Amino acid sequence: MGSEGSVSDGSDHPDGADGGEDTRTSTDDGEQNRAPKKKQRSFWKELPILIGIALVLALLIKTFLVQAFSIPSDSMQNTLQEGDRVLVDKLTPWFGSEPERGEVVVFHDPAGWLRGEPTLEPNPVQRVLGWIGLMPSAEEKDLIKRVIGVAGDTVECKGTGPLKVNGKALNEPYVYPGNTPCTVDDTGGQFKVKVPEGKIWVMGDHRQNSLDSRYHQNDKNKGMVPVDNVVGRAVVVAWPPTRWSTLPIPDTFDQNLSAAAPGALGLAGAVPLVLWRRRRLLAAESPRVSGTGTAG
Image (cartoon, rainbow, N blue to C red; front, side, top):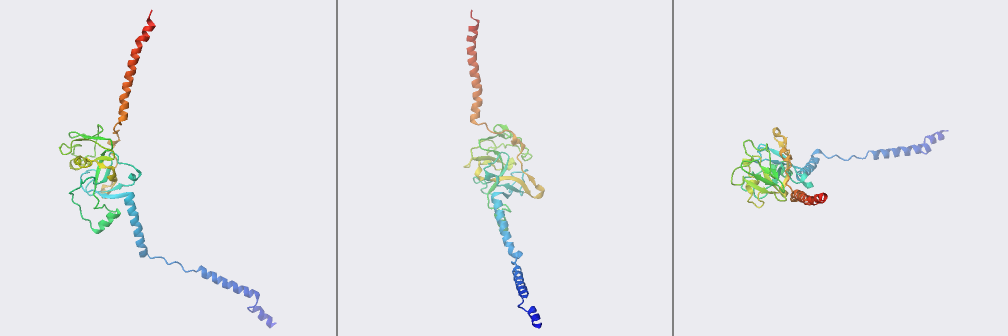
Protein backbone atom coordinates (compact mmCIF):
# COMPACT_ATOMS: atom_id res chain seq x y z
CA MET A 1 0.00 0.00 0.00
CA GLY A 2 2.89 2.37 0.85
CA SER A 3 4.53 1.88 -2.49
CA GLU A 4 1.33 2.64 -4.32
CA GLY A 5 1.08 5.84 -2.37
CA SER A 6 4.58 6.79 -3.25
CA VAL A 7 3.92 5.98 -6.87
CA SER A 8 0.84 8.17 -6.99
CA ASP A 9 2.79 11.10 -5.59
CA GLY A 10 5.87 10.42 -7.68
CA SER A 11 7.13 12.21 -10.75
CA ASP A 12 6.32 9.22 -12.95
CA HIS A 13 2.57 9.74 -12.54
CA PRO A 14 1.07 10.78 -15.92
CA ASP A 15 -0.89 13.70 -14.45
CA GLY A 16 2.16 14.96 -12.66
CA ALA A 17 4.20 14.84 -15.82
CA ASP A 18 1.57 16.77 -17.75
CA GLY A 19 1.39 19.37 -15.00
CA GLY A 20 5.15 19.85 -15.10
CA GLU A 21 5.17 20.41 -18.84
CA ASP A 22 2.33 22.99 -18.58
CA THR A 23 4.24 24.88 -15.91
CA ARG A 24 7.40 25.11 -18.05
CA THR A 25 5.47 26.19 -21.14
CA SER A 26 3.67 28.91 -19.22
CA THR A 27 6.99 30.18 -17.91
CA ASP A 28 8.45 30.29 -21.41
CA ASP A 29 5.42 32.24 -22.75
CA GLY A 30 5.75 34.71 -19.90
CA GLU A 31 9.38 35.34 -20.74
CA GLN A 32 8.48 35.97 -24.38
CA ASN A 33 5.68 38.37 -23.38
CA ARG A 34 8.11 40.19 -21.12
CA ALA A 35 10.51 41.03 -24.00
CA PRO A 36 12.58 44.16 -23.25
CA LYS A 37 10.90 47.37 -24.46
CA LYS A 38 12.66 49.64 -27.01
CA LYS A 39 14.40 52.46 -25.23
CA GLN A 40 12.73 55.83 -25.93
CA ARG A 41 14.89 58.67 -27.22
CA SER A 42 15.37 61.61 -24.93
CA PHE A 43 13.91 65.00 -25.82
CA TRP A 44 17.36 66.46 -26.42
CA LYS A 45 18.18 63.76 -28.96
CA GLU A 46 14.90 64.36 -30.82
CA LEU A 47 15.23 68.16 -30.76
CA PRO A 48 17.72 68.37 -33.69
CA ILE A 49 15.38 66.20 -35.79
CA LEU A 50 12.43 68.45 -34.99
CA ILE A 51 14.48 71.55 -35.83
CA GLY A 52 15.56 69.96 -39.10
CA ILE A 53 11.97 69.18 -40.08
CA ALA A 54 10.90 72.73 -39.16
CA LEU A 55 13.68 74.21 -41.31
CA VAL A 56 12.74 72.06 -44.30
CA LEU A 57 9.08 73.07 -43.96
CA ALA A 58 10.05 76.74 -43.62
CA LEU A 59 12.16 76.52 -46.78
CA LEU A 60 9.34 74.86 -48.70
CA ILE A 61 6.87 77.49 -47.52
CA LYS A 62 9.28 80.31 -48.45
CA THR A 63 9.98 78.83 -51.87
CA PHE A 64 6.47 77.85 -52.92
CA LEU A 65 3.85 79.42 -50.65
CA VAL A 66 4.43 82.59 -48.62
CA GLN A 67 7.40 84.82 -47.82
CA ALA A 68 7.76 87.81 -45.53
CA PHE A 69 9.18 91.08 -46.87
CA SER A 70 10.10 94.30 -45.14
CA ILE A 71 9.06 97.69 -46.56
CA PRO A 72 12.28 99.71 -46.94
CA SER A 73 10.88 103.13 -47.94
CA ASP A 74 7.85 105.42 -47.96
CA SER A 75 7.12 105.03 -51.70
CA MET A 76 3.89 103.11 -50.99
CA GLN A 77 2.46 105.39 -48.29
CA ASN A 78 -0.16 105.39 -46.90
CA THR A 79 -0.95 101.87 -48.03
CA LEU A 80 2.36 100.67 -46.61
CA GLN A 81 4.69 102.33 -44.15
CA GLU A 82 8.45 101.97 -43.87
CA GLY A 83 9.16 99.05 -41.55
CA ASP A 84 5.92 97.19 -42.25
CA ARG A 85 6.22 93.45 -42.81
CA VAL A 86 4.05 92.04 -45.59
CA LEU A 87 3.26 88.46 -46.50
CA VAL A 88 3.62 87.71 -50.19
CA ASP A 89 1.66 85.00 -51.99
CA LYS A 90 4.19 83.03 -54.05
CA LEU A 91 1.91 80.07 -54.81
CA THR A 92 -0.45 81.66 -57.35
CA PRO A 93 2.25 82.42 -59.97
CA TRP A 94 3.19 78.73 -59.99
CA PHE A 95 -0.19 78.02 -61.59
CA GLY A 96 0.44 80.43 -64.45
CA SER A 97 -1.39 83.41 -62.98
CA GLU A 98 0.06 86.79 -63.99
CA PRO A 99 -0.12 90.11 -62.12
CA GLU A 100 -3.36 92.04 -62.44
CA ARG A 101 -4.07 95.77 -62.38
CA GLY A 102 -4.33 97.13 -58.86
CA GLU A 103 -2.30 94.40 -57.15
CA VAL A 104 0.60 95.33 -54.89
CA VAL A 105 3.50 93.14 -56.03
CA VAL A 106 7.05 92.42 -54.95
CA PHE A 107 9.55 92.04 -57.78
CA HIS A 108 13.27 91.62 -58.29
CA ASP A 109 15.13 94.75 -59.37
CA PRO A 110 14.57 94.69 -63.15
CA ALA A 111 17.38 96.96 -64.34
CA GLY A 112 19.40 98.54 -61.55
CA TRP A 113 16.56 100.56 -60.01
CA LEU A 114 18.22 100.15 -56.61
CA ARG A 115 21.69 100.98 -57.82
CA GLY A 116 23.40 103.18 -55.25
CA GLU A 117 20.84 102.46 -52.53
CA PRO A 118 22.48 101.59 -49.18
CA THR A 119 22.03 98.04 -47.91
CA LEU A 120 22.21 97.06 -44.26
CA GLU A 121 24.64 94.33 -43.29
CA PRO A 122 22.66 91.62 -41.46
CA ASN A 123 24.03 89.80 -38.43
CA PRO A 124 24.42 85.97 -38.51
CA VAL A 125 21.02 85.36 -36.89
CA GLN A 126 19.29 87.63 -39.42
CA ARG A 127 21.08 85.85 -42.24
CA VAL A 128 19.79 82.45 -41.10
CA LEU A 129 16.25 83.71 -40.52
CA GLY A 130 16.30 85.44 -43.89
CA TRP A 131 17.55 82.29 -45.61
CA ILE A 132 14.69 80.19 -44.27
CA GLY A 133 12.12 82.94 -44.89
CA LEU A 134 11.25 83.87 -41.32
CA MET A 135 12.71 87.31 -41.94
CA PRO A 136 13.13 89.34 -45.14
CA SER A 137 16.44 88.61 -46.81
CA ALA A 138 18.80 91.59 -46.85
CA GLU A 139 20.63 90.19 -49.87
CA GLU A 140 17.64 90.13 -52.21
CA LYS A 141 17.23 93.31 -54.26
CA ASP A 142 13.45 93.55 -54.32
CA LEU A 143 10.94 96.37 -54.73
CA ILE A 144 7.25 96.73 -54.02
CA LYS A 145 4.83 98.79 -56.15
CA ARG A 146 1.25 98.76 -57.44
CA VAL A 147 0.48 97.30 -60.88
CA ILE A 148 -1.14 99.97 -63.05
CA GLY A 149 -0.87 98.51 -66.54
CA VAL A 150 -0.56 95.00 -67.96
CA ALA A 151 0.24 93.74 -71.47
CA GLY A 152 -1.66 95.68 -74.14
CA ASP A 153 -2.61 98.59 -71.88
CA THR A 154 -1.91 102.24 -72.69
CA VAL A 155 -1.09 104.20 -69.54
CA GLU A 156 -1.10 107.98 -69.65
CA CYS A 157 -0.43 110.96 -67.42
CA LYS A 158 -1.17 114.55 -68.47
CA GLY A 159 -0.81 117.50 -66.15
CA THR A 160 -1.63 116.54 -62.59
CA GLY A 161 -3.98 113.77 -63.64
CA PRO A 162 -6.08 111.79 -63.43
CA LEU A 163 -4.02 108.76 -64.40
CA LYS A 164 -5.62 107.00 -67.36
CA VAL A 165 -5.56 103.37 -68.48
CA ASN A 166 -6.78 102.78 -72.03
CA GLY A 167 -8.36 106.23 -72.01
CA LYS A 168 -10.32 105.65 -68.79
CA ALA A 169 -9.60 107.77 -65.73
CA LEU A 170 -8.77 106.04 -62.47
CA ASN A 171 -10.22 107.20 -59.17
CA GLU A 172 -7.28 106.54 -56.83
CA PRO A 173 -8.15 106.97 -53.14
CA TYR A 174 -4.98 105.07 -52.21
CA VAL A 175 -2.73 107.89 -53.48
CA TYR A 176 -0.88 109.60 -50.64
CA PRO A 177 -2.89 112.57 -49.25
CA GLY A 178 -1.71 115.82 -50.80
CA ASN A 179 -0.23 114.10 -53.86
CA THR A 180 -1.63 114.45 -57.34
CA PRO A 181 -2.11 111.25 -59.39
CA CYS A 182 0.36 112.56 -61.98
CA THR A 183 3.49 114.62 -61.45
CA VAL A 184 4.24 117.70 -63.53
CA ASP A 185 7.94 117.32 -64.33
CA ASP A 186 10.20 116.64 -67.27
CA THR A 187 11.91 113.54 -65.89
CA GLY A 188 9.06 111.07 -66.43
CA GLY A 189 6.00 112.50 -64.71
CA GLN A 190 4.30 113.16 -68.05
CA PHE A 191 4.07 110.09 -70.26
CA LYS A 192 2.03 107.90 -72.54
CA VAL A 193 3.23 104.31 -72.86
CA LYS A 194 1.92 101.02 -74.19
CA VAL A 195 2.78 97.96 -72.12
CA PRO A 196 4.28 95.16 -74.22
CA GLU A 197 3.66 91.43 -73.81
CA GLY A 198 5.32 89.90 -70.77
CA LYS A 199 5.69 93.23 -68.94
CA ILE A 200 3.84 95.37 -66.38
CA TRP A 201 3.85 99.09 -65.57
CA VAL A 202 4.13 99.85 -61.84
CA MET A 203 3.78 102.99 -59.73
CA GLY A 204 4.05 103.82 -56.05
CA ASP A 205 1.08 105.14 -54.09
CA HIS A 206 3.23 108.04 -52.82
CA ARG A 207 3.36 109.53 -56.31
CA GLN A 208 5.71 112.40 -55.48
CA ASN A 209 8.11 110.10 -53.62
CA SER A 210 8.39 106.98 -55.77
CA LEU A 211 11.08 106.20 -58.34
CA ASP A 212 8.90 103.74 -60.25
CA SER A 213 8.33 102.89 -63.92
CA ARG A 214 7.94 106.59 -64.79
CA TYR A 215 11.55 107.37 -63.95
CA HIS A 216 13.24 104.36 -65.59
CA GLN A 217 11.98 104.74 -69.14
CA ASN A 218 15.55 104.92 -70.40
CA ASP A 219 16.53 101.49 -69.08
CA LYS A 220 16.56 98.31 -71.17
CA ASN A 221 12.91 97.58 -70.29
CA LYS A 222 11.75 101.18 -70.91
CA GLY A 223 10.49 101.36 -67.34
CA MET A 224 8.50 98.13 -67.56
CA VAL A 225 8.93 95.22 -65.16
CA PRO A 226 9.21 91.74 -66.71
CA VAL A 227 6.50 89.44 -65.39
CA ASP A 228 9.22 86.84 -64.73
CA ASN A 229 10.74 89.23 -62.16
CA VAL A 230 7.58 89.26 -60.06
CA VAL A 231 8.01 87.30 -56.81
CA GLY A 232 4.35 87.42 -55.85
CA ARG A 233 1.45 89.53 -54.66
CA ALA A 234 1.50 91.19 -51.23
CA VAL A 235 -1.72 90.12 -49.53
CA VAL A 236 -1.39 91.01 -45.84
CA VAL A 237 0.38 93.55 -43.66
CA ALA A 238 1.42 91.16 -40.90
CA TRP A 239 3.59 93.36 -38.67
CA PRO A 240 3.37 95.39 -36.52
CA PRO A 241 0.08 94.11 -35.08
CA THR A 242 -1.39 97.62 -35.00
CA ARG A 243 -0.95 97.80 -38.79
CA TRP A 244 -2.52 94.42 -39.61
CA SER A 245 -4.65 94.65 -42.75
CA THR A 246 -5.31 92.96 -46.08
CA LEU A 247 -4.30 94.44 -49.43
CA PRO A 248 -7.30 94.02 -51.78
CA ILE A 249 -7.52 95.32 -55.34
CA PRO A 250 -9.14 98.81 -55.24
CA ASP A 251 -12.61 99.22 -56.75
CA THR A 252 -11.37 101.61 -59.43
CA PHE A 253 -9.85 98.64 -61.24
CA ASP A 254 -13.22 96.88 -61.40
CA GLN A 255 -14.31 99.03 -64.35
CA ASN A 256 -13.73 97.58 -67.79
CA LEU A 257 -10.23 98.84 -68.52
CA SER A 258 -9.31 96.30 -71.17
CA ALA A 259 -7.91 97.65 -74.39
CA ALA A 260 -10.06 96.82 -77.43
CA ALA A 261 -8.41 94.17 -79.59
CA PRO A 262 -7.62 95.16 -83.22
CA GLY A 263 -10.02 92.50 -84.50
CA ALA A 264 -12.81 93.86 -82.35
CA LEU A 265 -12.13 97.40 -83.55
CA GLY A 266 -12.21 96.20 -87.16
CA LEU A 267 -15.51 94.45 -86.60
CA ALA A 268 -16.98 97.51 -84.90
CA GLY A 269 -15.94 99.64 -87.86
CA ALA A 270 -17.22 97.16 -90.43
CA VAL A 271 -20.76 96.93 -89.05
CA PRO A 272 -21.80 100.54 -89.87
CA LEU A 273 -20.10 100.27 -93.27
CA VAL A 274 -22.07 97.13 -94.16
CA LEU A 275 -25.34 98.74 -92.98
CA TRP A 276 -24.64 101.89 -95.00
CA ARG A 277 -23.87 99.86 -98.13
CA ARG A 278 -27.02 97.76 -97.68
CA ARG A 279 -29.14 100.91 -97.33
CA ARG A 280 -27.69 102.35 -100.54
CA LEU A 281 -28.47 99.16 -102.47
CA LEU A 282 -32.05 99.15 -101.22
CA ALA A 283 -32.45 102.82 -102.14
CA ALA A 284 -31.10 102.16 -105.63
CA GLU A 285 -33.50 99.28 -106.22
CA SER A 286 -36.57 101.05 -104.83
CA PRO A 287 -37.37 103.40 -107.86
CA ARG A 288 -37.29 100.54 -110.35
CA VAL A 289 -39.79 98.53 -108.37
CA SER A 290 -41.99 101.58 -107.81
CA GLY A 291 -41.87 102.57 -111.54
CA THR A 292 -42.86 99.14 -112.68
CA GLY A 293 -45.82 99.11 -110.35
CA THR A 294 -47.24 102.47 -111.48
CA ALA A 295 -46.59 102.40 -115.23
CA GLY A 296 -49.68 102.66 -117.48
